[in-house]
Length: 108
Picture 1 (cartoon, rainbow, N blue to C red):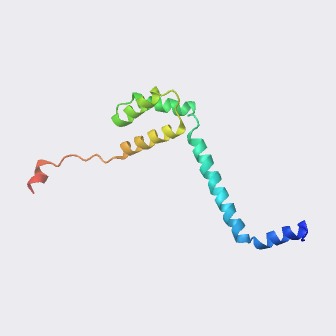
Picture 2 (picture 1 turned 90 degrees about the vertical axis):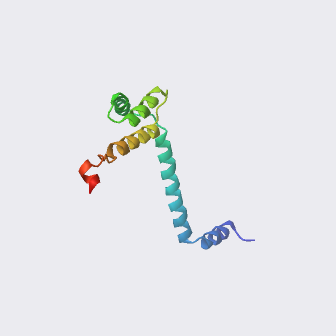
Picture 3 (picture 1 turned 60 degrees about the vertical axis):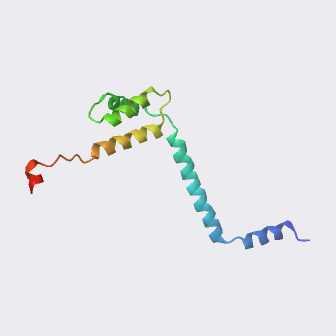
């Protein structure tokens, strides 16, 4: 029978360094995904809550205003909800606003 030391040496001889690197990369990616998901469910900071309340009161962007008002009615506001609101705000803010063509442009 082989001794325990020989079994350990034989086990480590079958493991390649490349496999260890793959495992390490997968472990790092899993940790990043876990921490990012955990961060999305944390509550908002007081500054972020103030910004949401300001967006709920403004009238320049009605869709964002409605979304912020609905968010203010929730008991627990997470950072995920806050980030969705900020994304909607920036999309609505950056939308191109085209004027209708002038009468002279339509004739040509």
